[in-house]
Image (cartoon, rainbow, N blue to C red; front, top):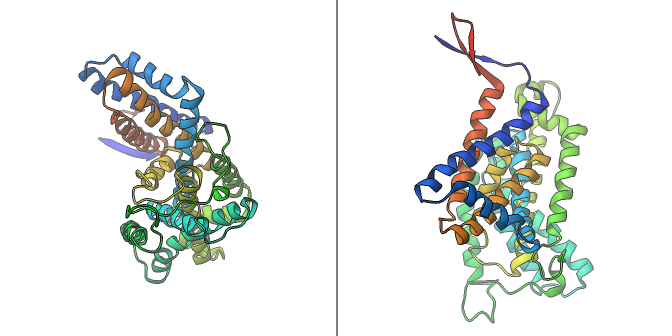
Length: 357
């Protein structure tokens, strides 16, 4: 007979090793379709590695791709820590982007030293507003925020499309559904000449460090973790649970909104309905791969960005589909979930005293 028993608290090395092992196992599984496609997995992974680290341009492209993933990964990780299931990062990203172009496309023609911070703050505020209604419905009526945030993504996208064909439409765009461009002084500064990497990446790193410190070393972080562990116990201990929910919801939405700001004010310069290829949803995968650790989010975002950018290079060099990147990311998440289960539980063969590791 098989019995599942909880393990003792796993060591830090074990907790850190699970995501790393999961990534390696995912690459092993991804070798199967590569073989089926007639490609040499070792050569394919070599091409993938070269596609990320083979040049300064490729490396900076990976960092650029990781930037919105860090923001959305942090948004999901912090909310999930409090058991507030924010699935609305995609919609909050678009709200942040829409606020950025509304402010930065000429509404205020002021020096960049004032305009850039204003765009960042307003984009974050717009994302926070996008998480306010689902949190209120959760606190006031017990509505499932998974459903409300997910459905709100589609509502926000329809709103964005309406605005792009109305008030925000570029009058010089020949009727194309896109916003007017952000003023040059409103764009996030580039970190390197002739590269797309921008200062949004530095902002994402700083916020990840701050989030890690606040989560582990502050009273706010203690309350957040207490609410996530047991709402009833946290309320009994005198913690204002509703205030904690609204606080982390605002921070989560703001971080997702900053992902939208980084994309329009750091890269594209204007807003379109296809701005995001799913950064909000991929951020959830990033958070899960990171074990909901803010610093882990940075590493997980770099890994996923490396897979996607490297897969493009591998596709060109080996003639295999770049969709292999989606397979690697999906299998990595599955492996992390399985690894997380065995990190918390062990399977015992009852009656024989044997433990299946």
